[in-house]
Length: 554
Image (cartoon, rainbow, N blue to C red; front, side, top):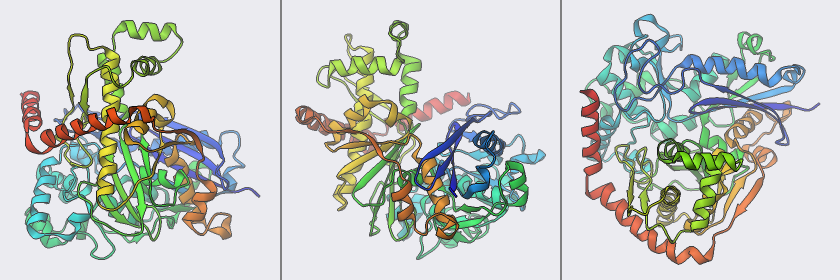
């Protein structure tokens, strides 16, 4: 009898689910758009949000689960009887406070209008000041964990977001029984188990197998009253990736039309899931998950502290291997912003008349122009810098515009800026002894924009292989679900075996064009100068951002 695993991927704007067999064939898939979306200006009751907020409503996730299961098995409920495992991934670090029963505090009437009781999405950037405070204290104390989070504590991670809540909404902080990442909360919702994932703890909460979470002494020195944050607010047994945190309860089984007792694998970040979803288990290969932002993953046998990386975590993707995570805080959303605000109506009309979308139209114009004509150079920090500067307050820039600059010139400059940013990340790995020989790319941007992927290959000077599965995170989660089930139930006893059997195949390969190499090497050196000057020496971007925030408050 054929067996199946369910992979559920919670993204920034929507949730997706796939039913996958043990050979990696996608039998069915489903999607669900979050009704509340990303809340950046108002809560559902009209409460206004300040600058930097990016919140979500947890009810969107529970509704997503019901919708996805109905869509996945509609008309074929006999397939549900053959499900042997469930895996879950989530954007990271997306977190929220919960009560003693594990329910979100925003479900309580008293906190309905308090933004700090809601889900803080990964790109919530209100905790930069807290991140800086935690970093300064860690450096002063020479905390060992700093070498494994790039030398700076990033504002998108767990402790800055928790500290922000303590300082801005102490009532919410003290009422919270726990703070949980949603990659841990969804398995709790399905199983009732309070266990947490080692991958999640390591990637977003500074945990490591030798020392655990940061000490209470350090946290208290960073902020009075914060010393018990790890001990009291992050409780729960930690579970290895690929192992079950619990089993589907009878209540959820009835709700979703599934058999009770299905093992649910420890949750993990969407990019970690995508690594095995692409069928990867070898070192020297970088996986870039390209969606709204981009997240870069690789594995290596040793743990090396590399400055500027988002995180280095033991066993975060594969047991026995260290997972390295870097990335760029903008990718697909940069092009979405550009099309919305920069593209003339005439271009839109011509694209429509040609029967193609605006991105394909722009790609054609930019490709015809080539990389030598625009005279533009851009920085890719429209949503801050994730690696290697770890600074959410930085912003974008385009240099060299003149009266003859065209829309497609700017479009190409932005594409090249993203590729230069990726090259800078690969350069950082190389500097610390980790060679990257090729890059796999997955996600909507990678599969839909071959022009951009060719630019990446040309600028980085390495092959770019496009995963045959558009949503590698979903397939990866299904692989973790198959591992949680084990061979006796029809799955696999090792993640490596499951990844090799179920992981996605390559659909397209981009090789670097040698004719552009010299030009791009020269341009990259200019990019590095701008990178260092505006990222380290001149604080004008931060000063301008503060002026903007003051203006919004007024």
